[in-house]
Image 1 (cartoon, rainbow, N blue to C red):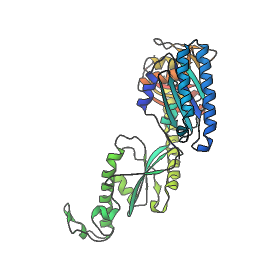
Image 2 (cartoon, rainbow, N blue to C red):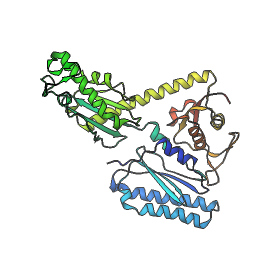
Image 3 (cartoon, one colour):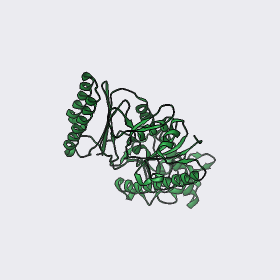
Image 4 (tube, rainbow, N blue to C red):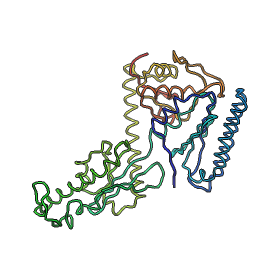
Length: 382
């Protein structure tokens, strides 16, 4: 089973604003298979050693280095921690603290030592999280399933969820009679007959399901994908109150489909959803570029980010550019090597754009407009 700690935007902003003269960021590949944990622990040891070398070269005081080493050694020896992993691990260390995130994306190994944390790889997880809810609804059953990246799907417990349509509307079958003889609204349930009556009851059932889901889904921004046959799929859509309901759905009776197969179908829908979103964003970038509201040069993007002008930022998730960005002017100074005396220019652009409430999309190199390390649409010219 995959074990994931996906950071929220607030978590990332907190890391982005943290400052400590000794800040170490490590990213390494892991595996959800406990039998492969030894390889990850060896990689941690190698990356931690590289970080310590950078700290020594930078002249960091010995007791601070020893505190950092102690954090890494404690993590290395924590066997229970290594039994529960995902596909990548992000580690943020200062002499006083350590924070980890188990991530579903397969990230490249990286070591960054500076006075701030290296946050850019984290954004891949929140850009296209491959996570969603599936509402598998049929006349005789309903269940809410949560998926996340390549993890096994699991059913979410929902308080007061109707067991089925008949139970939700007080019938002994979806096309049968009232079990109570009570009047619902201005209409006696037992007097509704035929296809019209069935649709009325399915709508009542759908409203009951929607009401039960509200406390569970409130505060989430994950997509909701419906798995249902008609006419129930359309009826549920007509009463749904969750704003992130996906237009595409999984057709057919979900009672005949396993959670794993529903998850596989949902991931295909998410892939299409993200591809369409990315295509729209790139088209918008092209239009804005024609009107002088898009920049692709690293220096121009750094300046725009410094003055809070970035509206949407594309960033190459794998590319690092050592150097500095001036706090006031946004002018960049590149470095010939990556060491503890500098930080990543691209990461600093991400940090400044993030803190000015820009939308950030961490993508692969081929998806960055202009082919550079970054590209941005801007709110105003700078």
